View 1 (tube, rainbow, N blue to C red):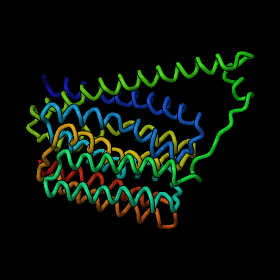
View 2 (cartoon, one colour):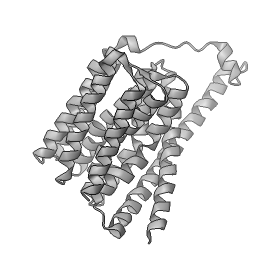
View 3 (tube, rainbow, N blue to C red):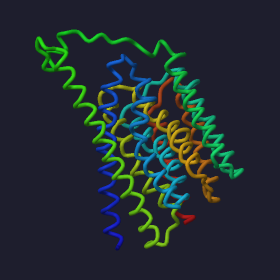
View 4 (tube, rainbow, N blue to C red):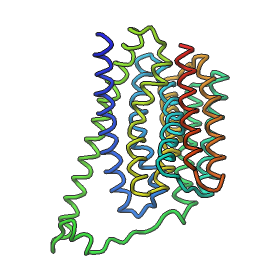
Length: 326
């Protein structure tokens, strides 16, 4: 198979990943709102997990196909893509207001996770024990969100007028049941689309790496990472247009936390990984970017257009380093 064919497959897989994750996000958010969960918590949990579904499918598939470089580079590359290109682009379009909760709790946890993963890579400690530690940390963080942050969770009372606009008549319960079933079917369709897109992405990226003579690590940290981050990009752009600032940072920070603790943790639990030497450099750059993001969040409690441009430049610099070292 030639280069154009594989690039076409990557494009098709990116569309499947994007649309599938979009269905997952919309359906999961609809279900979550029925329980009255705030936008920040939705972004950090439901939306983050939904938009991280491509990373999960690609990483697990790559690990089981004996491609540890793509498995690990996809997670690292996606996290850098999220905090660099996506956050930077959204901030350039419209400055993003921030607050202390995002800084001290969510960003702080992500920084700690990033440092922990870097230590694991340096020590080549990427086995089942490490995966268990990461997964336990994710469970603990999720419990914290729902039990120790009551101000972020509000009960939403759905009045009868709103339901009638959705088509409710005197048989209101029956109509609500139909809406729920449709939501669950869309959620299932989203997972099917993401699963198919993830499989195609790994196969096409591997073939492309072999044809071009480029390392699996470079392909994974650039093309595959960008493709699996398209759901985050689409979600954040939509949230920016609608002025849902908590959803933007909640989605990006939550996705990065879920990628490290959930995706990478479960992958290592199922199949231990071994990191190439270039992984450590990517982690150093990711830690530098994470510190910069924390500074920007605290600086005036606002991520400005200039700061967004700096994040984009850092992400592009990291891509240049990876490609030049291929």
